[in-house]
Picture (cartoon, rainbow, N blue to C red):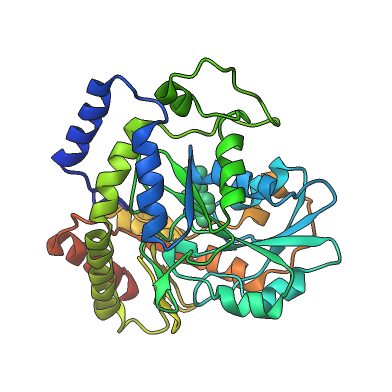
Length: 374
Ligand SMILES: *Cc1c(COP(=O)(O)O)cnc(C)c1O
């Protein structure tokens, strides 16, 4: 069976984990600090604060922004559900906005339709690694705090710079469904040193001095707990893997873009088929390569997923819509036509670094067979 995604590791990751184990310090320590510095530099951010996941990094972002009960946060419904859930973690209300069906991302206009006097922030997602037009949204919504959910977007570019460059708060994921993986893991990036310092305390129980720094200094002075924090730490085992994966990232992006271009080339002749593609202002890493079926396609999305599975191809439904899930039932009378069209008619095709041309051909041929009526 051809999988949808498969992480790309070599012996270097194994060796890096072995070194951490041999050092005797496996919790958050020097490898995490190095990964934070190098990852932040790679996205041209001033500071990186590693976390246990993108979800926990987003939670920290909302706490740092002072968002709480009574506040509304605009989010796309078309996203992994964590984007909406984190708003609930701080007692605030997620308000779902529609998306541009060409990219799956929020626009200045869709944010406008979701704004009320209680709106404090918007979480702008770079869905599937395709960059959102953050500057367009910022220009139209002065004073609205934008938090970037860049979970999928390591290695994507926006207006000639890495996605996340210049963001007040951006959150990243290193889950194996993304390109660069540490098993589980995340990062918060910011240009503000005070925000970064507080984020470091919050992800470690609100401690005034991190356990690693105390160990390194040999100080016996007790630490203080400055506010109620969390245990959202990454381990040195994970960061050691992340450092090796970060070196591989440019090669991973290049390979994914080549495989995506190959899909566009071989599937472009199917009438009415929509495909994930770069917007004019940036380049995606193609973390997800999705296609959306036209109304006159011979089978619906569910039938096509079954048809592909019977031919050894494991595809997935397209990006979910949180407002259609039981967890958000009854939260509003949402009017999200582009979201509902894209989530119902799209599917994610296999794309992974080690994918061979023969495997790629097998997917392409199965979709052509389906388009011809099965
Ligand atoms: C994967 C993903 C997340 C969650 O990331 P984790 O690291 O698994 O917590 C959040 N938002 C988006 C858009 C994602 O794709």
